Image (tube, rainbow, N blue to C red; front, side, top):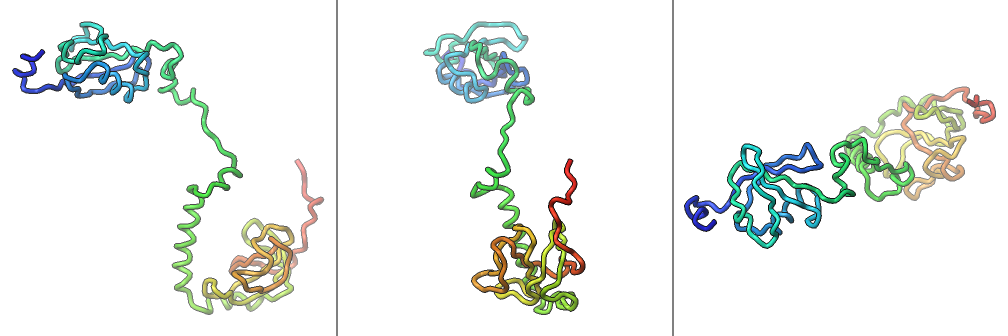
Length: 242
């Protein structure tokens, strides 16, 4: 081994690695010929998941003929005289291995992780909240450029006491306030008491009360999202059941 390393001027070898259970696994890896077989197995374990204790290594030449089992963990890899282009096959001897039966290749065999909508929303950080935050920041940046009389003309036909329907979800309610909102985006807003507890507050926003209503019945919307007219409260018993 020593003379071969000296003549070659290199103490590494490029080998192809395959796995007995993972048919799609094939990787060319450069190994140090002086590394122990034990260290070799540790490195292969990190690549293919077969534990060191359950691993049998078989060395093949570049023509596919078996040369030997790499079995002595205390010896260096160079003891087995592998050459560039040779092939090491990892044999997984564990019948209950996670790699057996195609579990690491056929994703249809893997139980998919699911999370309920409630549990997802309770997480302090999730993609939905991040997206909403970014959209809110962008919207705030855009709204800060709006004039102070933004949408004022649309408020001419909206007054407190009007029945209304809001664009989002066709929720209904009664107009309680029309005007500007302190510490809010520039322009005009419509404060609404919804018929159902689908709002965000009780008419108080950022410490200032604009109108009175039950908790979670209050909401502020831009006037272009509000339609006033004959919108009586819906009778839940009139809804068709399936």
